[in-house]
Length: 77
Length: 425
Image: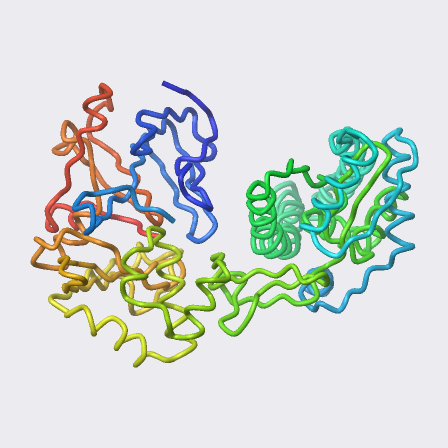
C-alpha cells in the first residue's frame, strides 16, 4: 500500500487526473486504479473542470464493455 | 494586463517570431555564466525532436556530457525568479496595500493588495501558462519523448529555464516590470532570451542545443486542433496532428481525411479520447449527416434518458443543451453484438460513445453501468461526483477494504446512480 500527498490517480491516462491539496492519497488497487483520498482536496486534469472534493472519498475508474473480449475493462483516455 | 498577456501569447501563436540567433546565443552564454558554467558550444536546430537528435549525435562524437539543467534551474531561481518575486511582493503586497490601508483602513487595504495580485495572476500568468504550457509544450514534449523512445535513443531532458514553459511566470512579472514596480537586470536578460524566438533547449556541460518556435500552430477552444492538416509544424518538417487537443497518429489522420476510417476501426479503438476526436473530426470536416450515416449504418438508436441537472450543478460546465443527455445505441459488426451509450462531456461538450453490455435495454441503466463501486460499500454511498472517466464517491461509513474487497466491484441501477450523482465535469 503506497501513501502519497499528491498523486496522479489515473496513471494509465495520457493526460492524468491529479489529486491535489489532500491530506493523504492511498493507492488501494493498482490494476483498477482505485485510490482512497483523505481530507478536502481537488481533482485536476487537462480536459475537464477542476472537481472540488470536500470529503474523504474513493476514486474509481469508469469501466467500459469490450464487445470482442466480452469483458468490462478500465476506460482509457 | 490584456496587452501584456496578448503580447506573450502572440509571440508563439502568431507564428511570426523568427529566431534572433545572436540574441539567443547571448542569452544562453549569460545563463551558463550565471550558473557558474563555462561558455558552451551553441547549436541551433529547428525542432525539439531535432534537439534530441543533435544532443544524441554530439554525445556520440564528443563523449558523455552531463546535463546541467538543474544547475541552471537553481541559479535562475535563486538569482532571478525569487529575487523578482520578493521585490514585487514587497511592492504590491506591502507598499500598495499599506498606501490603501492608511487611507481607507485595513480591510480595504488587504482586499486591494490581494485583488491586484490575483487579477494579474488570473488574467496574465494563468492564461498564458495554460495556453502555452498545457496546450503546446506538454503536448509536443510527450510526442518527442515517445518518438525518441521508439527509436531507442536516450531521451535528454529539456531545460527548466530557457523555453516557452517560462512564458507563464515571466509574463506575470513582466506586467509589474512595465508599470515600474521593480527593475532587475537578470530578469530583463532572461526575458530577452525567451523573447528571442527560442522554443526549447537541452543544456549540457559545454554544449547547448536549442530550437526555434513552430512555424504553424492551429488551435480551437480545446487546444491544438486542425482537421485539414497538421496542427503544429516546425521548420525542419517535424509536424504533429491534433484534434481537440488529442494527438492523432499520421496514419489515422490520413484515414479520416481519405474517408477510409471504418466503423470497425472505431469499435476497435481502445482510447475513448481518440474515439471522441475521430467523431469530432468527421462532424467538423464532413458534416453532421456524414457522422450520422457513419454511426447509423451499424447502430440503431434504442432509448434516450435526460437527467435535468439542478442549476447549482451546472457551475463549471458549458451549460450546453447536451449535458445530461444519454442515448443507448445497439447494433453489430462482423456478427458481434454491440451497444454504446452516447454522452457529452459537461466541461467541453465533446461527444463520447462508450461501450456497454448489449444486455442493457435502456439509456439510464447503461450510463449507470459505467460506474463501479466495491460491493462492500454499495449500500453506504452518500454521493458520487465525476471528472471524465474518474468517479469520486463519498460514503456514510469508514472506508476500510481488504485487497479482495477493493477488487470486487459492482454497478448500480440507473435509478440508484442518478439519485446519488452530484457534480459531473
